[in-house]
Image (cartoon, rainbow, N blue to C red; front, side):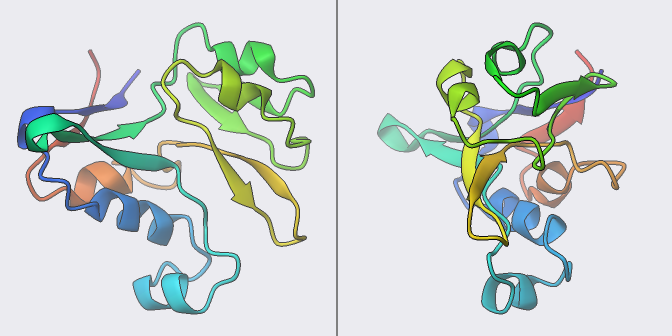
Length: 147
């Protein structure tokens, strides 16, 4: 199964991957509308981690073979679909067990339209051939490949 992998040596911390992710998961698919008009704005699905000496990389779900997040989900909201770990937001009760169970810290809280909360994570952009974060990365610090 193809996944998004970071190449730390090429990441310059520009965070375009974060912007591309928000736009891709917005209703409008327009950068200005997604950031200025949509409420709530689509939540984060990845982060750019910065270390010492300027090292950085984009961190998103690894879609583990044995996902602790799916095992920890008390309501069955996290599930595997053709290898991709997904969140059924209608079933999420915001208990955050998945956040605590993820060894990579790749599941985030997202405010939903009803004012409640649910878990949010990378879904590998199911409507795209290449996830938006990997496609937009100017240095190819994110690659979408099978290993």
